[in-house]
Length: 225
Image 1 (cartoon, rainbow, N blue to C red):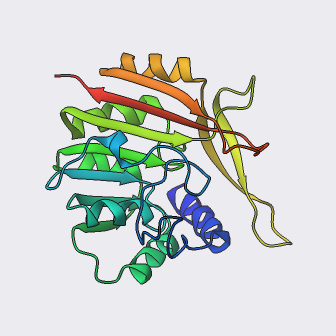
Image 2: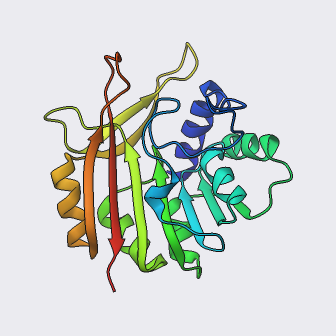
């Protein structure tokens, strides 16, 4: 199963361009929660300080993790796609303060002895992993008061729980299929509270003015004492 998921995300990586060289403010690294450039909240969602430790689940080509590393935060990035991680290493070959791991988010969390000040996922592993399995082990890896935050597309109305995502492949191949988990903001709030998170918030960030596309669901919770 993991091998087929790796292949699916490597396929996706071939179609995903690298992050822009700079953003609209001329910065070479930045944190982005949404699918739109220069839009939405920033790194302050995570309440991190220099010297803290963060975990990026589904780090992709490393843009958000690289930004945290430049702020003095130590970051572990985990992704199933070797191709995505190769993009990250190519873009930031001399980056200090991060480690990149190929593998499954659940496996990494179960195996690590590191305690994190924040665990986050931007259109990443929290979208594509059963929350009943992921949230308990994620909770264990957070320090008390640590932040769990993730963003993804809002659900299609009436399509909740485990759904299918299709990743295009070659012209003569069927799409690769991966599972994702979709819930309304209110349901995500209940799910996180049921797993011991407090100060939970979940809402949809509206898309940029003039866009007719969907917004971005942002969910955030804090590990209780």
